[in-house]
Image 1 (cartoon, rainbow, N blue to C red):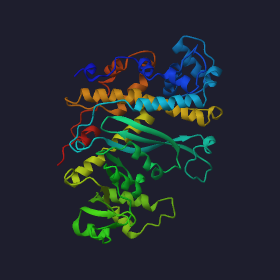
Image 2 (cartoon, helix red, strand yellow):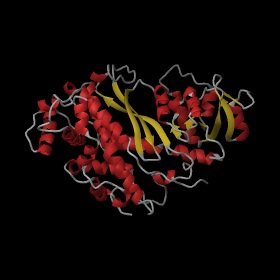
Image 3 (cartoon, helix red, strand yellow):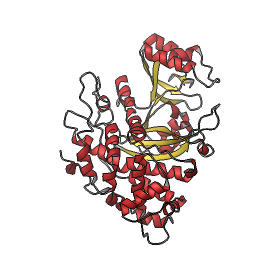
Length: 437
């Protein structure tokens, strides 16, 4: 299958950004008050892409990149004047518009066919200089104040695109953010997320939306049988080996769902127990039952058995969380979006500018290229690595910002972006698409 048959645009990134009416957005939010002369908002974004991929920051270096792009003499002060709240509002709306593009399904797994959309909710962290600790406070440390930003993301696995990003501090926990996904849900959607988002009140809202969830189970949550009797999980698992039972979750909600318990290998259980014993939080006074249950993986879901008839479906579905983990790793490591920024250049607005513009690379370049290449190779015996796509785009960012079409870039990098063919193990894409045993 050729790339033009799967509708990967032959336009360059400037034309793609133009479709989102970036200059109109700049006027709308007051980022420009009159006609742009030396450089446009699009020029500003593209030159910054080059700068962050080079890994260094100063307004003078940015001015050089912008000057080469526009073939004009630009001063660092001219860019500095544009770093304000209106330009952030432009970037936020542009990112939002880019996330609302319509795409066909990219994941063809029998596990997910019954659902309208499959969402993965997760977060990743970025360390910042301690000078920003008042804005993005990090974890508590004996060494003094630290700063860490947290990106909360919602990824639509069905469409192969992010649906939303939110920038918070490290201390804004996942449970606080768990409610936000409700606004995205429609009847028949599925949400997969980890233990950090375990909030029974939010799970109850899934039921009202007629949507589904799959989550790790939080130890300490009280469970009841369908007859209303409290369940001792350790006794149950000792009797049956593994469980897939109907329960009611929590004293307050009595939320009907399925509880699944699966034994893990001994070395995995021992590693979990070691980490629990070394827990820095002294208030986490774990019981003997807690440590014994670490020998099992516990899931809860409201997906009925006529859709997922056995435990294998649940294991395969939850395994798909690797997708967003790999994207985060590709974003931070392979795209190398890490800046050596002097403290004098840092404040809240500039940090937000950095992250919103880098998220636009993921939304407008990385994901469309990955989706296109993965579709192209779907009928062949190889898969595309997101990490390798990120690395290749990092290496070719100058070609992208100077006018090469996204389609040409995809053709350049498709060979080097393949997973290596190995007989001893499956790659991550293959693992998610394995048939149900």
